[in-house]
Image (cartoon, rainbow, N blue to C red; front, side, top):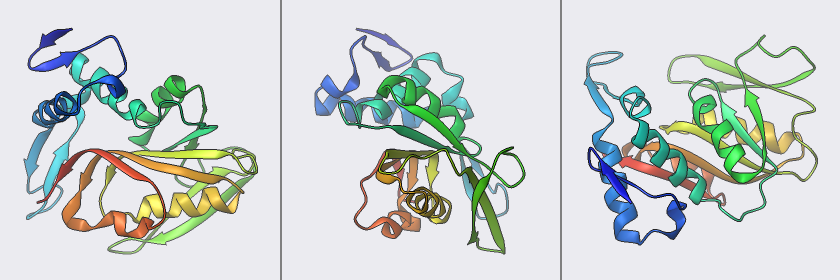
Length: 198
């Protein structure tokens, strides 16, 4: 085990770490996330994960800790939500021996697509997935960088189940507790690594 800038590094999966060490590591990872006040508009505090991603040990520990949540579970497909979900989902699919499927904004996927529109704070947005991307009864893990109000992730749950998939869980790097996003997922397994209450 070695330490770089406060991040503990182990060759084995973080699932085997003592709980206090895992908690300490999440606290250290949180310090690597840059907080940008008044972005994208006044009164909003933006949590910028690019400073975490550029830190080699921080990135490795983030992926390892995410993968540890589902180590040993039967996951057929890891779905990543455009755009920052694409950073983590392929790495998790590799760790878990699963396939990776992207959920994209409209007109980005070339083959036959299923789509869903959902409400935002101001207006609507639409997401799409290839109709042949999810097999009937496949166990699907949905991954994104952030759980805020939960609207985007809920739309992806509806896409996956509409294609016959079973949502094994939803996994996020950061969760904004004060927005109560996880309330949209009663009955689902929701996990996040780093949580903010304001």
